[in-house]
Image 1 (tube, helix red, strand yellow):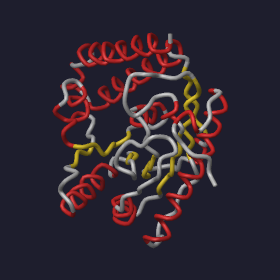
Image 2 (image 1 turned 90 degrees about the vertical axis):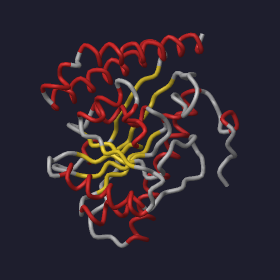
Image 3 (image 1 turned 120 degrees about the vertical axis):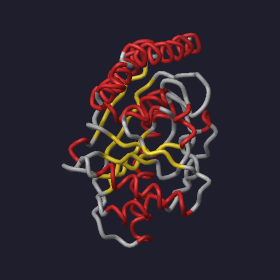
Image 4 (image 1 turned 180 degrees about the vertical axis):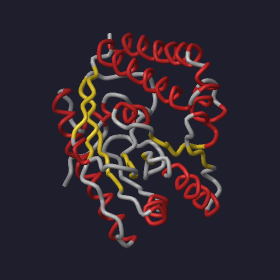
Amino acid sequence: MILVRSLIFTTLAYITMILAAVLCSPALLVSRRLCVEAVRLWVRITRFNLRYITGIKTEFRGLEHLPDGPFIWASKHQSMYDALAPWLVLDHPAIIIKKELLWYPFFGWYAWRTDMISIDRSGGAKTLKNMIAASAKSMKGNRQLMIFPEGTRQKPGAKPFYRPGIFGLYHALDLPVVPVATNNGLCWPARGIRRTPGTIVIEVLPPIETGLEKNAFMKRLETDIETASEALLEEGLAEQGRTRADIGLATPS
């Protein structure tokens, strides 16, 4: 039954994305703000379907930690939902995405029109320089910059690998970084269509103030996100009646 519901949800997600993109397409020519609201509408529909088709609830915690004005949202990355859920609580996020996504039908249209920041992940130092310049431009609009410090999706409990690009942004933009933990990979895995009932928790942690040196910043960021995500992992497993061994993880020593 879980696989059947998962298939229905995935099918509806693509159908509603296409319908929303086509029906709201006049906004592409009229207003960036209308495009933002069109994306937000689709995310709300997706959250509704996730709850009532697959039995997966979405819970936000720690929203009181969100600063006023622009900041960097630095999130654990376990599934596509990490890029969707923030649209429910942020005004107009600027998401750093790989440039190939701009060529995707429907998704690419709105990513371009809502001023997402596309990067060439193979470009080395030039990529970081361009990313900082594009991010600085976006932040003038009082937006929130969204980045995944590990760069790619990881399974829950996997060994973390935080890339230094996040520090380059933190240092150059002189903005607070808000660490965000999650356990969503337990319900919505990085790959495949299986959606396991449970509660996806997105936990916003206290901001990291500006001005830290690289080592101190990277250690603080990783410790905050990984400690909170580990706690959410255990909480999610208990809710689902599973163990770490069930998802291929050893018990922490």
